[in-house]
Image (tube, rainbow, N blue to C red):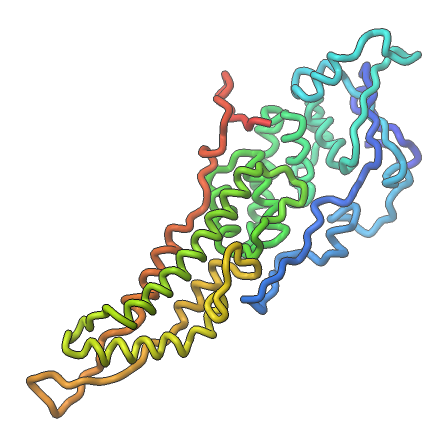
Length: 371
């Protein structure tokens, strides 16, 4: 690590290149609290906005040293050979330089912008195989910052082993949230960059069912647009199917419904069910008044919960054998609309990671993402 009075960080003392990090420590992954008209609960897992804007999310309260000031560029001395080997992105920049572009100290110069200084130093130490300088435990915030850079610099293979150590830690200390939140989107980025199939499916399933926005917040993390658009489309389609199912049952109760207990009671049965359903429409936010795509402010999970809460009317009939004792009529919403909506929600599953991998595996068997 660099001294507190220096703007230089020595990664490789014999390095032939200098990287200037301009505007270090820019605000990372700014989250805007979404509108949720169908829920009065808050995501307790989402950090307060003031904490999100802090430079370092796991600081111990010490004052930031001068060299970490966002207004002061930081210069890293590095080895071009290490960077060229580990990162095609760094390689293209460094290999494009000519010997005539060296400074008076025979050093090449390249620039980058906005990275978190601590995360960038961890990245560079890892690419230089300086593993004793690399922490074995990271917060979810710091791991995500590194994941963004790993994807940007296309250096997935260099982080294949150390990332497993970091991920084991966050699974315990920063478990995946079960609500649509900033931390969930950080988790999604981590599962994408480090290729975690099961957790990618889990994260996308939570987004699909819990998101209340027509446009999922990427926060500049670099999650592929194809993933986000697929989730947005599936969410909208599922809610639309629920509304169509609800309307189709209203039509059936109004016209063609046949009582499952006694066809001769179809008129009475359908009238009771239709009245009960119409009376409870206000409890299902997307139905009264009926909204249209893209359903901003509504989550698939909340709509499902409201449908499941619809009460079936209780009434009694007599059979032809014993007219002294009434029998509870069996027709209701559990075997009709609630059942059909449950099938729709059950089909709304998380995405499969391999469906979005366009690159073939390399010689070592590491599956890489296409930039």
